[in-house]
Image (cartoon, rainbow, N blue to C red; front, top):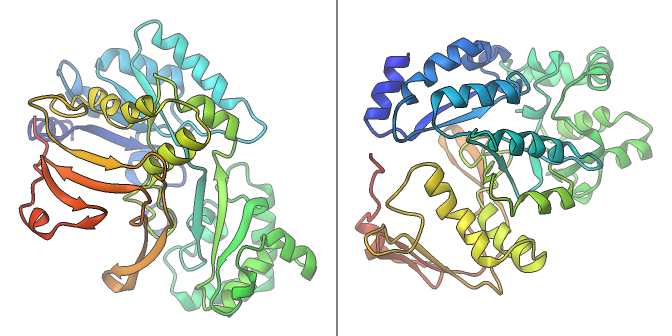
Length: 377
């Protein structure tokens, strides 16, 4: 496996990534392979980065790897580490504690970059694919069952009672019932935007009963959304301008039917720079471009200079914003995804100097030339 990593780096891979997150499960609810690896295996797979002049390790410690262990491993490997995600929590100073620990380590030469996000961590889910509930045993057992079997379980009073007990006793969960609201409901559009807890109080049932009853009435098409974390506005504002964190956690290629934060760059420039003024426009642009290019070793891009790739976007700082998300059904087997393809204030886009969008509209002749190139060492 280490030889494969070494070969991949020779072929142009930008680094190595791994996850210990307890939410990352595969078929039958089993953990993905990286979750059962120990620290020695991770160190062995990172060893090909040692002694190279480029390459980054991207990790999701998941509460398994301590920061001290990460710092020690980074000292040995000698290449930058980045990890997701340093989230904020309302009423907590957790993010301050983490940054104090990292600042002290950085003072000794450690090169570890927490990733932070300007957007609250919001999930959309339905009970056909209850991702944020899959850490609970009853839901884990249903992950590979047929729709009919799921619906039968959801109707069963005993299963409901046991599941509600699990939800109330679990030590870890992405499920935050207090922030859960109805996002979409074909049969009850009047309930969109209503908090689940509020509906439960009105009906005299548990919040889980509300979720299950609405879902069953909609043949599991009901969607709910929840703010899971990163809901401390002051904490986010303190993290974003720092020069020892990277902007990240867009999750743009995963959980595509549940969230889409690909618009975090326009959100940063509009909501946090223009409206909240947490940093200068120039600083924000650098954090979106030059800073990650330097950390990831992309020396031919990241700033506007002669000889570098002319990948440019032109935007209006007075109107820039993320726009609305929309749901698209264009994957195999009628698979759904959320997309953020209607940003505000984005005018022109150039790839290697070739305009591919002008005044927000595609340029067919520019797109036809496929001006982008594969990034190689």
